[in-house]
Length: 223
Ligand SMILES: CC(C)(COP(=O)(O)OP(=O)(O)OC[C@H]1O[C@@H](n2cnc3c(N)ncnc32)[C@H](O)[C@@H]1OP(=O)(O)O)[C@@H](O)C(=O)NCCC(=O)NCCS
Image (cartoon, rainbow, N blue to C red; front, side, top):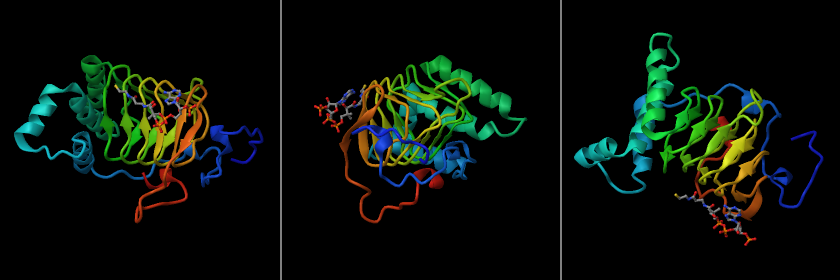
């Protein structure tokens, strides 16, 4: 974060947490992802939110609730986007997601396993977005550019974005961050905090990782 001199109390930019990176690293290459089956399996587990849902009950949820189908379609679109042969199918699935649930989820986004879409209406995730494990998104969230082609955010593990929040620009959001409903996040956020407001500021520090949990210099390095 060299070059940033403006310091405000509670401003997300005053973080002393280890966000070791150069300013352009949020646009760097994406780390490898697990296989498609593992990704979808992890997502469905996360969508069950601790409940043991298998077999016909799981199929019923997928059939009856569009948000479950949106997760699966998005994963398929992400996987099929990379080959010219399957790219048209990926784009068709992206349109399908938009038509069934009003969410614009770009297939080029890189989202780690354990994705949860709490609600899907008005959700927009740009193609340059990267996120770690167990991302939770509520309705009307926007993850994308602050200015056209200006870069998109990179999120760590266990991030929750509340309804109506916007996370904009090539910024880094740490691990275990909660973005309050209707916030506008425009600058880096350290791990283990809750941010709120427009522009968002830290309103609460939270506990760090549970004992034994993996850590690294920055969560985006292990997506
Ligand atoms: C942020 C949130 C998770 C609460 O987190 P918390 O750590 O329990 O925080 P608190 O409720 O103690 O609030 C801490 C401060 O942030 C403020 N705050 C909380 N949510 C806020 C919001 N959305 N916008 C602005 N300020 C907010 C509180 O007023 C409080 O301020 P104070 O210390 O001056 O009184 C919750 O308010 C929220 O926004 N959840 C989103 C859930 C959602 O999207 N639900 C949709 C369901 S359909």
